[in-house]
Image 1 (cartoon, rainbow, N blue to C red):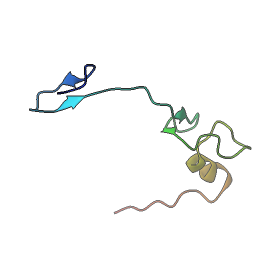
Image 2 (image 1 turned 135 degrees about the vertical axis):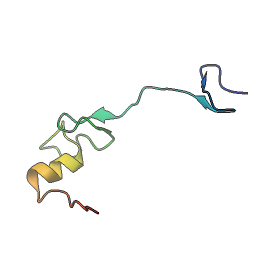
Image 3 (image 1 turned 90 degrees about the horizontal axis):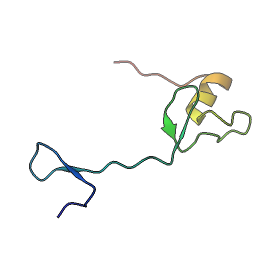
Length: 63
């Protein structure tokens, strides 16, 4: 039995529930992440953005 607030999809036995996130949004990348504010110097940035702003930047891997 699906939860009362679930919505049925077009697939058999597949139901969807949607809940608001408790994660903060990074003002730079707009991702909702638990590590926003992890660096006190940048309380509105996620740690990924802190590395890109203050550090050497993230390592990108292209195929």
